[in-house]
Amino acid sequence: MHNSAILITLILFSLSSPNLLSTERLKQHITKATSLSLFDSPSYAPTTTAKRYVNPSAPKTGKITLAGFGSFDTLNPYLLKGISPINTPGMGMYGFSEANEPLMAGTGNYLPSGDEAQTAYCLVCNTIEYPSDLSWIRFSINPNATFHDGSPITASDVEKSIQLLRSDLAHPRYLDIYRHITSIKILNPHSIQFNIEGENRKSLMLRIGELPVMSKAHWTQYSFNDASTTAPMLSGPYRITKFQLGSHVEFSRVENHWAKDHPLYQGQFNFNTVRIDFFKDRTVALEAFKAGNIDVFYEYVSKDWATAYDFPARNSGQVLKEEIKHKIPSGSQAFFFNLRKPLFQDVRVREALSLLFDFEWTNKTIFANAYKRSNTYYPNSPFEAKGTPEGAEREYLLPHKNSLPANIFNTPFALDTTKGNGNIRPQLRKATSLLNQAGWGLSNNQLTHNKTGKKFEFEFLVNQPSFTRVINPYIKNLSRAGIKATVRVVDRSQYKVRLDEKDFDIITFVYPQTLSPNHEQRLYFHSSQVDIRGSRNFAGISNPAIDTLIDNISSASDRSSLTAATKALDRALLWNYYTIPHWHLNYHRVAYWNHFARPVVQPQYNLGFTSWWIENKQ
Image 1: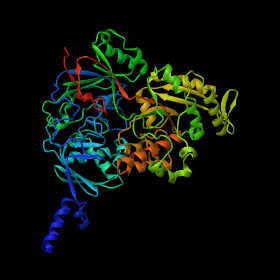
Image 2: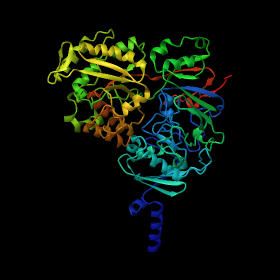
Image 3: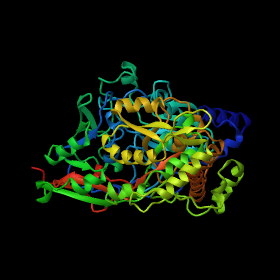
Image 4: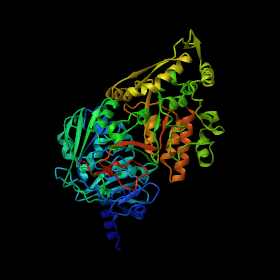
C-alpha cells in the first residue's frame, strides 16, 4: 500500500477510535460481543430466549402490593440527600432496587443474575467492543431502545447519565466507582466509548455496563437534586403512575415496552401493577399482610418467624410459609465501632467489647437458635478466612507483617463462645484484662480512664425498635464491666443523616457481599472513604495494610487469586476488631398468599421474585 494510503487509513481509524493512535495499538485484537464476564465464560448465548430459572410462558397479569419499610422523600435514588423508595430496606430482595434500565444487566441491581457471578448481558446496548489491553470499551446502543415518551435512547443520554453520577449532586460512591474513566467520547448518536485506566479494567467495564441510563431531556428540564415531586423518565417494563411521598408508590406495566421480547425479560416482571406501601413499624406491616393487604412478606425477624404466623389464613393454607435455600453470600452484618471517636481507637478496647457480646445466649433466647455466628466478613461464601493463612493468602499478608496483629499468621481467628446460659465470667475476665492494659480501671463501679478520668460510656444508634431486644442484654453485660451504654432509636431519615455525617458511636449495619468481591470493598474499608460525607466506611478504617489488601482484590486476574486476596483482607479486618460480627442464614424466609406460582428451578443467588406470577388470584 502506498505510504499516503497507509497514513489516510491511520488517520481515519484514529478519528473513529481516538484512544488507539499508535501503530502498536492498531495491532491489538478487538473483541466484539453481547456479554461480558469478569472471570468465567457467560452461560447464555446471545440467541438464548430465557434464563434457566424462569418460566417464559408465565402469564402477565394482576396487581400485587409489597411492604416497604421506613419512608421516602424523593424519587431519585442516586442522590446523597434524601431516601428513595427503591433504596428503602427490602426492595432489593424483591428485585425492585433499580428504576432505570442499564446498558447491561446481570451484575448490578437491575435483573441480577440468579446463576452466574459477575456476568452481564447487553440490554440497552446492542453490542460492546474492547481491545486486548482493555484500555477502552465501546457500547453500541440498541436502535430500538426508547424511553416511555417514545424518544430514542442515544449516546447523549448515556453521556449525561455518567456526568450526573460523577457530579457533586450524586452520591459520592459513584465518583469513586468511576474514578478510572479517563475520558468519554460520543462516536455517533448510537455509539459511545469510555477510555479507562487502572489495574482491574474488566471489572470497571462491568461497572460501566451497570450504568443506569437516564433521559438527558428529562434532567435538562428538571433539577437532578430536586426531584422529590417529579417521576423520572424511565425506559423499563414499568412506569411510575402513582405516588405519595412517604406513603406509597405504584408501578404499572408499559404495554409497548421496547424490549418486551428481549431474552433478559422473558418470564420476568410478570405483574401488571406493583404497589409498595410503606410502614414505619414492621409489626403493623405484618398485620397488614395477615389481613390480605400485602401479598408477600419477607421475614427478617426470627422470633416473628417462629411465633407470629399462627393465624387463620395460614392455618387454612391460604398463606404459605417457606424457607427457600440459597447460596447467596451473606452480608457483613455487625456492630460497627466508629474509630473516629477516641474511645474506640485502641484495638484492645474493641476486642474487649466484642467479648462481652453473648451471641450464644442471644441466639438461644431471642432467635430460637435460628442463626449461625459470622466468624467472617464474608459469610456463606468461599472467601471466609479459616485456619491459619497458607499459600497465596499468606503471600498477600507477609508484606504487612509488622503492621498487622501478631497472632494473624499462627492463630486461627475465632470469636469467643459461651455456654448460652447467661454466664460470661470467663469473657468478663478477659475483657477486664484487656481494658486494664488499655488504661481503663474501675472507680466506684464505673470504668474510667486512669490518666484522664474520662468515663467509659457510649451510645448505640438504631432505626429499628425491635433491635433493642438484642442490644439491651448486651448493655447489661457491658455494665458488669463498669461500662455505661445506652441505645437511641431514631427514624430512618434521621438515621441516614447521622450515618452520612458519621455522627454515632456504634451502629448496626449490613454490607452487601457478592460472589466476586471488588470495588465495593474499597467503599467499605478504604482510607480514602473515611472523611467523605455519605461514604460507607462507617468504622472509619484508615490502615495502609488494609488499603493494599483491597487493591489486591481489585487487581486479581483470576478467581483463585481473588479468593486468596479476599481471605487475606477478611483475616486482617477480623484481627483488628473493627466490628462485632453478627449472624447469618443460608435460606430465605418468605410468607405469601397462595395465588402466586413460581418457576420449578430456584435461582441460587437471589430470591427470583421477578420471575413469580399470579396464577389464581380472584
